[in-house]
Image 1 (cartoon, rainbow over the protein chains, first blue to last red):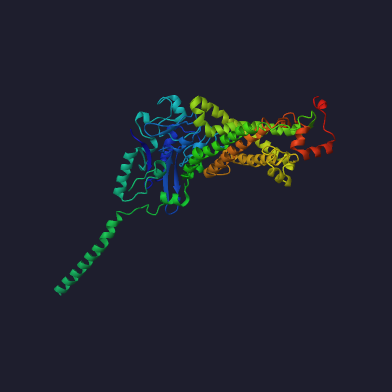
Image 2: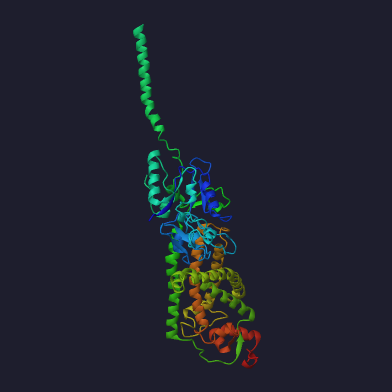
Length: 198
Length: 331
C-alpha cells in the first residue's frame, strides 16, 4: 500500500495560491476556513521563500493522539482523517498540530467552536465513498476515484507534489540532482521524522 | 614588417586564448547557480525560534504560522504527564481518605449534642457555597472526562455514546464556568475577613487540628484547615477560571503556545483542586459529626461550635446573646 504524503518543493513555489483556490473550490470549504495556505517567509526581503502548507498527514499523528474522543483514524494509504460526527470541537488537536491544520467554523463562540475541519488529502471521511453526506461534511473524495489531491494537481510550477512518499521523494531527489540545489522537504522532519537527503 | 604583423597577431591570439581559459570556468559555473541560496532554511529557522512564521494573503492571519513543533511536548504532557499527576493526586487522595476513615472513623462530638443551635452560615452564604459546589462537581466530572474518558470510559460505552456524552459535558463545562467564576469571586469577598492567617493558625497546625490530632485547638470562625480550603478555592478557582477563559476564547489573548501553557496550568491546578475538594467533601460529610449541618440547615449544634470553633462561639454569644434553643430553631 502507498504511504501518501505532501511535498512542497519550496524552491519552485511562486506563491500563486492556485493550490489554495483549487482546494477551496473542490471541497466547497466554508468561509473562513482554509485547508491549505501559502506562507511567505521574509516577504519582500532578500531570502524570501514561500511554502504551501496543509495537514501533512503525520506519522503517529499528534492530533489523533490527543483527541479526547478518539475521532481520528489513519487510512490504509496513511491519510489522517476524522469523523465530524464524533468530533466535539474541544480544540485539543489544534493545540497539538505542528502545522496549524485543524480549524473550526465558530472560533470564539463561547468555546463551542463547531466541528473541526482540515485537509482530507481529497479522501473524504468515514461515510460511503463519494456519497452526498461525505461531500457535505468533508468535500470531494478524489482518492476513491483514483485521483490525487487537486492542490498538487493544479500547482502551476509543480512545486507541490502529492502521492506515495517514496515516489515523490524520488522525484524531488532527481530535481535536486539536476538543478544542483534544494532546500529540503519542508515539514517532513516534523511530520514524518525523516528528511530527504540531497 | 610581415614578421612584425605575425608577431602582433600571435600575441593577440595568445591573449585571447588566455582570456578564454580564465573566463571559461566562470561561465560554466553560471549554469549551476542557486537562485535561492540566500533564502531561509527550515532547520535553521526551527533552531532559532522553534517556530516558522510568515505572511499569508488569505484573511486568516493566524495561519501565517507555518510550523510549530512544540505541540509534541504538549502532547506528551496531555497524554502522559497529566494522567500521572491527576491519577496520583485523585486516586491517592481517595486512598488516604478511605484509610483515614477506616482507622479514625467519624470524628465524634465529644460532649454530645446540646440540642441548642447557633447560626453558622446564613442563606446567602449557603447559596454561594452550593452554587459553586454544584458547578464544581459538574466541571470536575466533565473536565476529568477530557483527560481520562478516552482510556477509561470510551471502551465501555463505545464511540457514539461517548462522543454524545462528551459533547454535552463540554457544553456544560463551558457554560457552567460562568456561575462557577461568580461563585469563586463571591466566596472570596464574603469570607475574606474570616480567612486572614493569624498566630492561632500556627498553634492549630502544630496541634494537628481536630482531625489528625485528638484535641480541639481554639479557632475563630475558620480554623487553619478551613482557611487552607478557602485559599485553595480562591487561588485555584481563580487560576482555572483565568486559564479556562483563555482556552474558551482562542486567539483573543494569546496564540497556540499560550493556549498550550494555559491548558497545562488549567489541568494541573484542576486535578489538584479536585483532590483537595475530595478531602473537603469528606470532612464536611462522613468525616466529622455535626459538620454538614453548617452548610445544610445553616445552624450547628452549640457543642460542635464549642469543640471546633471555641473563639467564634464566644464572639457570637457575646454579640447576639445566648444561642437559640432547639425548640425555637425547629420552627
